[in-house]
Length: 270
Image (cartoon, rainbow, N blue to C red):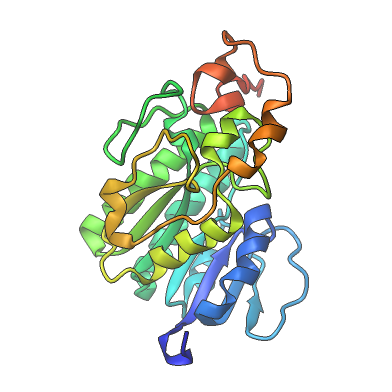
């Protein structure tokens, strides 16, 4: 990619997280400057990096963070099932603060890390597309469904384009039978983000994040315009995974697409 084709400044929130660390490196070829943000330690900035710690629940701090950016890859927030009060601050207040900052500062494209947990209470084996109704499997999934709705509102009213990435299971390799279907390699994750950043027409797009695995629960035909074509597959890991003990077929984690998330909680807060 020529330097003139790159984004000027790309904001990556959640840069200290597992996928944030991956994208911190793999997205460097696509921006002249990477602005990195998290509440956790991110280490020192390297060439072409700006390290900006930020609490997403702090509206003024998020406003400063967004200023001067050309696009945002938003991974920040709580990434597992937690009590609602914890989810509320980073995942609900935080995503609102981010889009308000984008509106004020003229940022017109966001890549929002949504999750398969938006649709986690659909049965395994059911094939879903972008128009399938949300069925969140917990507070985390609810917060991502809220983010998808919020981003749609900001597109309709303010023209901020968003790709909502319903990320499956992005790890070095799949860990169980469910992940043979939901696995997203790091290479395919990077390509999915790249396509979302540079697609000529994005609008408001929901796209499922999975590699080209043998078995599929998710149909991305309604996101074809972004040009995402995964290259990897979970097949090389199948024998290793299928040698592990299988779940009881009656276990909710074996029945629903969200896996073990459908069993998380309740969290006692009184």
